[in-house]
Image (cartoon, rainbow, N blue to C red; front, top):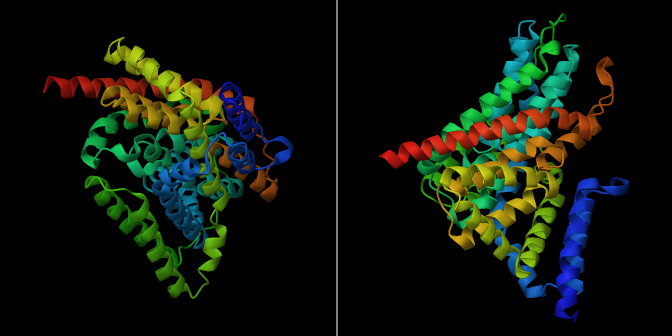
Length: 434
């Protein structure tokens, strides 16, 4: 057993190094192995008792079920050509205008994020959009950045729009009516301001025209069935949210039923879908739960509560702005998954509600638009580009660096975050008057 005074140094060191290695990915080793390796080391060194590690992992059951359901449906939609069809419709609907195509891709990305979560937009929609714009022979960068940034900018419209929402509020998830009242206007401001900033930054590319015809992609009967299933699942989840029920189990069950029906209709093997689920992502999230519980056991939660209390004493409006920006920037240092877990634990332990709690969630969801290290979804977006952007269809090989993303993010994120927090403050003031 490691002495307590040494453990207080070793434990946070292991966590910090693991997160740093997750973000930098030395030798291209996937993020999951750095985080799960760090969590295993904590257990082996008995810095975290095995029973407590098991309890920490069990805390994330709702998140795991939600992720499984969303990944299953995303893969089903990809397999049945739904995303390719959507991308084709957007390109053909542009009628030769790059600016109109930008608007359509932005609208598609917004809808996919709202109803299928930001991971679906960043990971599954991106390759379809890339293929479509390359066939149209236009610069893919504006449309790819849309997929990355709208995945975060629209991720707090609904509780189902981002797994981080489940992590932050966890057992204290507001009912749907309260959620829409709190985040409807801030989400609208976030989406609009992100659009206008990106539209301005890519204005030269968007002044051009699309000079070639793009082949129309037809949606199969099973693809239509998937769309109908997605609509049904959305209705189920909104109902569950309105009734203040956990979202993980309904998401997973709905996805299993839809997948079974489509597989029977298409006469395909459903095990192919199961193999495409990123089980490593679930291991990553479970390991993060262990790490965050370990850090909390060292008093990190008390420090976070003290800071939150200090910010609250500045006044609700000033405190919300400060909390939102600090949390938003911190995402890009430690990633929004571990930060979301710590923020959620802090909110729950401090019984924080109202504007300050809303500012925390907005910071966790929107802050990752600053850099590629901000969220797991953005990291996966970058990996998807590296995998699929090999210069096919005569296009150049894409290489979006940390600095290239930062040039866009350092303008888009603060503007949208300020607008979203301003919207939250405005709605809080209006509600307060009544």
